[in-house]
Image (cartoon, rainbow, N blue to C red; front, top):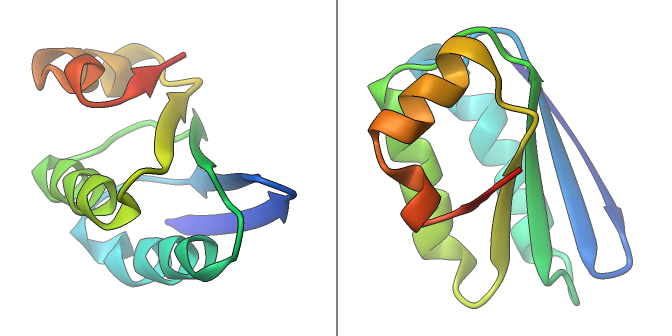
Length: 99
């Protein structure tokens, strides 16, 4: 998995590519650490447009990000198919804004 990130003012984007599994934890942590360290970021968008699969480790990584984010808003975007189904089954819509 690849995780590319960018920041513009108070908004940060993390675009994931590939299967979001335990094997991608290092890339995900590097991206999230970078955006959490940036001053003034209020919203972090995780883009799933190019993710075809995620496992329970990925769900755990998202939960850890939610804890580390504090007052920052986490938005999950462009999750479709199996990825969206897994997020829905895990009731992530109660913890995150999903678009």
